[in-house]
Image (cartoon, rainbow, N blue to C red; front, side):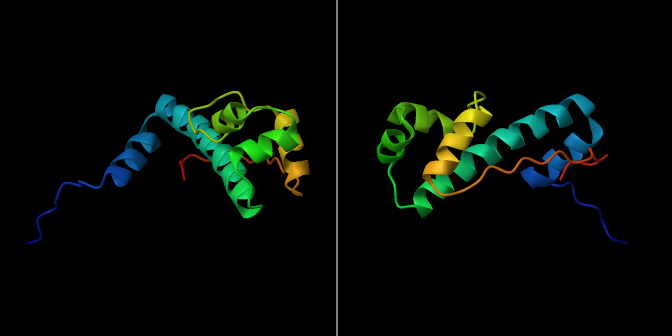
Length: 105
């Protein structure tokens, strides 16, 4: 008879807990959006071959503002700033509202 081992994979544990706890799921989804926005800005900047300071100058802001935008913990993303960055990087902002699922992905 097979013995069921306890999961020690942190990602699997988090997914299980998120699926079971509505409040935790809401927090997870909010943080996921912040992470995705920060990552998208950084990847686009790097693909354009720009430093944070160079992008900041083109956008009309400071290097520290770009640094904050690329930080997944930053919650002050605004559509206007994302549009300014996208314009400089020859990109476009795409926002999607999708049905909430019962399970976090």
